[in-house]
Length: 433
Image (cartoon, rainbow, N blue to C red; front, top):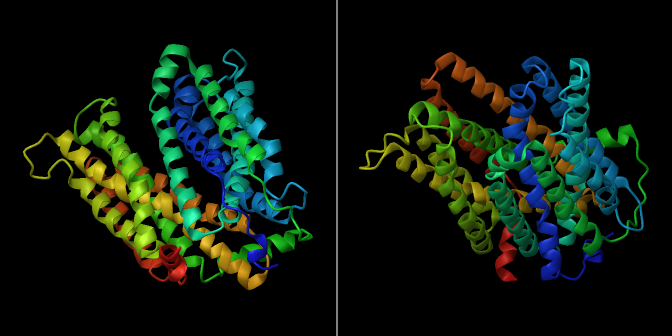
């Protein structure tokens, strides 16, 4: 089937808003889990640190292993509603329920029951998150008919994720005033309002190709994706970037406590310039990609990030007549611009890779690319956590500066890897439209 046969009218403004709103719950749920799950279960005395670590590790393994299976399943599905929408219909409500139950453990139950409960809800979260988010992201290459429209969609997703970040900033206040169940209710409602409208207002093309699924077919597709020379530079480059970005995010709270000698509350003040320039960056890189192309824009993201991430290690010694906190805020603000560019460009470039694959093979298999990408990117995020813990344990406060240096070097590795990307003309047609 030709790509032109799959073309559809451009999305209306309302449909655009409906689709990009998925970025709100995607970001909010992950941020809240990263920040508060340990507090709820370990500091709250529900389970021990060892049990929590094993439960979370098992959940991450489920997350990484299940992604390509879910992706393959959605790619070969055949229904009159399309390949992705049925997954959103049936998995969104279970995800919302699990997001609520995560914060309501049986505090008075025996220890074995509390551990079993924690394991069940964590496994449920990672499984249902994949069942919703993987098909949701795989909709992008189909519903966006042109590089321009896809770039606008990823920009809108970026703005929605920023809204999720702002709501996340209120999570501590919600817990303090209303308790953890209220936070769970906020997450459940966020999931419902982010993903269910997509099932009502976004329409896929009904699947016209029936592909018989098999385990051999899954591994064959994974191998073909991993050896796709159009995809590899993007996959490796973005994985290095996630490693660097996660290092920076973990570095900020420790920097506030150790280098700035301030309380945890100062983390919010430090991140405010980051959020502000993040918002500006979404629109700036949308504009830039339409002028110079997505390839050149993402190369700029890698270069700027490498400089600024490394500079953060000296953000308390910039030589300016300002307080160390203000100097750190300046560097965080600078970091927000390229980080926004990464959010805008990475998925839009992946959509170009998927189109090239479909043109070469005649098969639309969007989700398997997102699934395979998730394996490496989530592994790099996990590796960054291990690296951060090890370098802090080995070097102490000096390790904070080295963490920033390594984050910068990881961006440089991403720059070098992505420089071999072959579909450089994918963004040039934007200016002609």
